Structure formats: structure tokens, C-alpha cells
Length: 217
Image 1: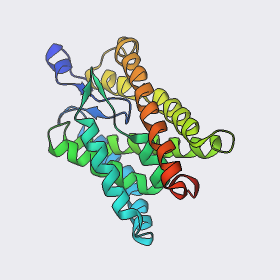
Image 2: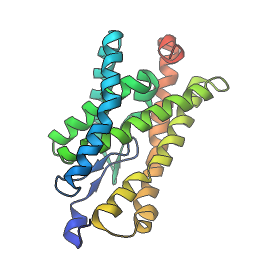
Image 3: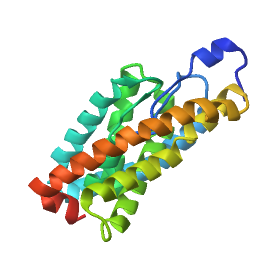
Image 4: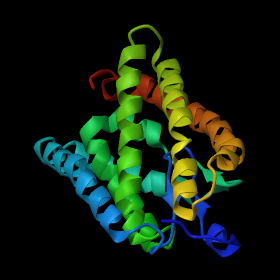
């Protein structure tokens, strides 16, 4: 399946590497694929909702981080934007973060930043990033200070995941992926540095004010 021509290309509005958020309008990806992505995303989101219900103290934090992420996503940096995936993963953990990124993606879709049908795929990608940052952060914090561990974990995961939107767009419009990798992905990797600096600064500040938030994960 592919969509040929410049008109199809112009419909694509990729997001930034903070979360590898893909802005695709409805109708470009087959509905059965969209259903598969939604079904897969329902698993971590459902588990995350159960986790939040059992840990009531995280409810406010989920809403706060989701709101901040949505606000940051409205500020373009070239063809990219910051999304706060790192803080979401580090502070919420691998399951509760799924709920936060689902809320953000749904809100973006309702605001016209991509279609409703792409929410499932975006949630999967976003959750994978958040969980990846959380896991790598836990490994690094034993050897590094909190800020450095958060920054390195964020950049490593987001720079790696920044290739995903390029492959998705190449698949959707049936074009070679290399031009996307050489242009858009390169920009997103640079933006991942900004995301890493923001995450490191946030975690370092929290380590001083609320050390249990970044230690007892």
C-alpha cells in the first residue's frame, strides 16, 4: 500500500524525537493495521491504568506530565518538537507512562495533529521510548549522578527511535527510506540533544527537591 505523488507527501507532518510522534491524517494507513496498533497499545495502557489505580499518588503526576508534554509539543523546532518522553518514563515508570502518552496522543489527534487512526501506533512508539528511558536510567544511575543518567538515557533511546517515523512515512507513501533518514532523522537526532538537556535538568532539580521521586522507582 502506498500513496504516490507530491500531494501525499505534503500530507505528512512528522513530529519530533522527544516522542517519535507521527502526524499522519486519517486514511493513509489501512484500517486493519490501525486496529492492530490500537489492540497492541491497549495492553500497556490497560496495565498502566491498573497500576495508577493501585497507586493513587501517581494520578496527579500523570496528568501534570501529560499536560506539560502536550504544551511542549505545540512549540515547533524546525520539523521537530520536544515531548518530555524522558521525564514521563523516569518519573512514571514503564506502565503508568503508557497512560500519559496515550492521553497526549489522543489530545493531539483531537487538536488536528494527526488523525485518530494513528493514535494506537503513536502510543506504542511513545510508550516504548518512555519504558526504554526508564530502564536505561535505572542502569546508569548506579554509576552516574541523576542528571547525567537521565540525559544519557534520554538521548540514547530517542536518537535510536528517531528512525521509526522515517520508515513509517516511507512505507505509507511507498518511497525509499534513505532520503528520510538523511534529512528528517538527522534533524530529529539533533533535537534529541535538546530533549536530553531538558530531561537532565528536570531530574537534577527534582533530585534536590524531591529525591524520592527519582530514587525510589
